[in-house]
Structures are given as structure tokens and as C-alpha cells.
Length: 277
Image: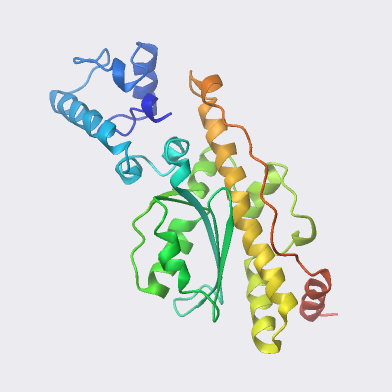
């Protein structure tokens, strides 16, 4: 899709991009100056320069595109940089600035990696630097700034925050809400959310309850693995809105086996402790 993309050029949005496609300017290679759509002289110069830089950026610079695209349009980079992409989700002790990161799940499309506070959490910093793109849900507003604050680092990766991409398609209500709208079923983890994850960590920490930790990791990993399915859904649905949809559609891969299992008894014990009855 990147080769068909023009809305990363200065002054070009979706409507102008569509007019370019209709006029036969369907790829960077077919760009001509002057273009068949009216531009200012400065915009034309900027367009030529940006397109030349775009070709170079295809090699290893996804940030070049995400910095120029609206947050709802960054889906366009997904296939090109997919082999250098990781899906990321974190759990914490709360939402305030003093909250600690408890677990992190990282999935590269092949293998799931988990990092646990007090065990191997610091390994995450080196691990995440292997990737050029991070896919999250609300990562811009939560996961990324929390990680940067907690580890005192800067994460330079390009970001595809699915919250904005899916919202443009009409899917809202948080990660779980989007999953349900798309027919995704969490099974035994249905109803478990971020607040419940805090309680699972507390139970593990206070009682050394390994089943609580396994359940937390199962939940964290499910969040992360599901991001791949959501990214492909978002990409395909957006691609189908273009004239090139049929040639761009991506197949859904088989999800990886989740290496952790939620303990139903542990979940029920916490639920009973929250019940006023």
C-alpha cells in the first residue's frame, strides 16, 4: 500500500489522494510534474522531494512515514515493515505516574516473549530494540510513555496505535470492545480487564500465587497476540476502500499457542472477593 500512498505528502489528504488515483497517478512511479490535480508551486516541490525520500525510507525508516501520516492512516506501512514489527502490551500496578510495570508481552508474529517484574523485566529493553515498528492498542497514550518513564529510555520505533486506526473504521470501546465487535472470543478470560490484571499481580505478590501469575501472563499474552489479528483486520478493511483492495488483502495467519493458561479457580476467587454479597 505504501507505493500507492500520497497522503504523507505535504498538503495532501485522502480526498486529494483519491483524485490522484482517479487521474492515473496510482503509484510513486507514475507521479508526474505538474500533477493532474492542482497544487501550489511550493507543494509541488515538497511533493517531489518527499517522494524521492520515500523511496530511500522504504529500506529501514518506517518513522519517515508515520511522522507524516495521520494516526488513523499509519496502517499503510504494515505489510512493508511487517517482518520488523512487534506487537506489544503491558500490565501495571495502576494508572498513576508512580505505577510499576508488572508484566510485558512482546510478540513478533512467530514467538511470544514475556517479561516479569522481579524476574527478567530488564531484558525487555534489549529485546524491543530488535524491532522497527511497535503495534499497540492505546500505546501512544499509555504503554509507550509508561515504559519510557519506568525504564528511563526513549523508544524510537515507529508506532501503529490501533486505537486510532480502528476508530476510523467505527470500532471503539477499548481493545476488548473492538475484539467483540469483530467476533473475537476470549474464552475463560472473558471479562478479565486491566483492573483485574492489577488484582492478579497483587495476589501473586502477596501470596506467591503462581496460578495468579500464570493467569496474568495468559491475559497479557492474549492482549498482545490478538493485536496481530486486529492489525490485519484494520489493514484489509482500509485497503478494500481503495481501488487496489483485491491485490493488497493479507491472509490471517494461525495464532501461536499461548504458553500460559488462565486458572478459572483463581479468577473466581478474585471475583468473589470483589462481590458485595
